[in-house]
Length: 353
Image (tube, rainbow, N blue to C red; front, side, top):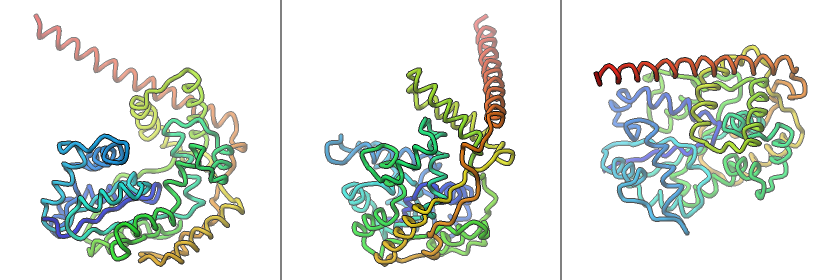
């Protein structure tokens, strides 16, 4: 039976990929301290949480006992020591789903919510949205976030994932304050290892015992983001709705393994709006009032101006360069795939002779 389960619930764009990569790359070292990163690979956690989101709640089909979520729960409950789950899709869950999670997991449940300041997260969430297929431009995105109108998909998605005080209250109420920790993401300029040091503190580990040379998850440049937004608008107009292939071809092969390398050549998205600073300060005030256990410093969640430019300052030439590099990459991907396809056909024909 598990002695302890550490459930890292996000939020999005709060260093989650870094923490997940450190945990995944240090499985053997963690095991020496009686800690397991649940699942054979992190993708098992993603699939399990997606199963939890889709099943088991009011007006939903029940969870399949042999499905991904309950299989992961069974593995966690059967593993002695500490099990760690890190999946940012958990943060926005409603109380009924939180209680389902709480009641399924045995041992001492410790929930960790990581949070980053509002200014950096608004910019990061828009850049992420265009990589996920959104055709909403920056100004429209910013206006929707400011409105906090949950009837609008943009505002609803943003505040579901970034309303830290609301998320913290809901989870702490369900699991108890003694089982909830808010961990702040350091402001820009802090040592790159500091976020892991804080998470290691939650795990009662010496942070120096673990390798931090993990795959990064860098943000895209602004010219690339604008190019993707225009591409998404064209795909939307053509009725393209295949999220699976978009995720593979555009988000991963084109962007994360290609155009992201342009970030040093492109302008960065900036944000310096008075309402953002005011709204971020209100969020911090609400968190102070709630009185959660904090690792880090709530002052780190006070927004500061994000250096960079507005999309209107990105030239057509800069966008064209990003688009042409993207087109070149897609041609190379097509050639590589066609080559593999032809070689498979040749092998099959040879085997049938």
